[in-house]
Image (cartoon, rainbow, N blue to C red; front, side, top):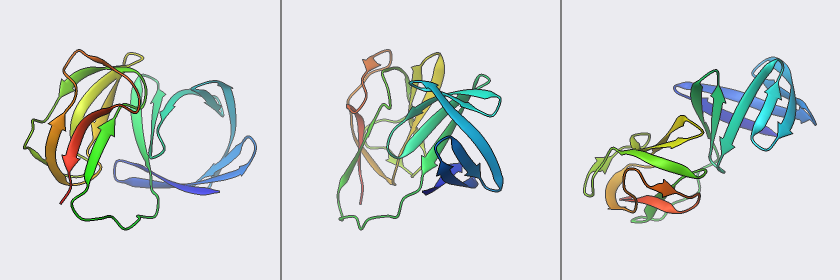
Amino acid sequence: MTLTLVHGEREYKVDILTDGLIRVDDRTYVVRSERDGIVRIGGLTLWVAATPDARWVFLNGRVFELSVLRPRARRRVGHDSSLSAPMPATVRRIAVAVGDVVKAGDVVIVLEAMKMELPIRAAETGTVRAIHCVEGELVQPAVPLLEVAVP
């Protein structure tokens, strides 16, 4: 299985070779899952939170947000895009208001979980239609936090 992960402007080709081995670009690593959310790659320990389309990797006090690129399905015109938390978290900041126009990749909400900030980014360009959370609120995974009307 081959995945393309994106971090910032950089794309990484990740091949899952066999149980316990991956290749990132041209380097091969041994991967061990120690318990839920904790992964060892080589000599590094990482904490990982995931949704089907994104991965948040916590390493040495930094958060790396990786997006999983998948072939785009044809989308219907005028649909809504709702955004949710990848794990239980506290809403630290809401960066938009209803009626704001956002571009794909804009940070719309900042969550905090496991003492790390998790930026929630708009998946597509559109207009903020509704906000279903408030700053300081504890939110749960898969519960819509914000809705964006996509043209």
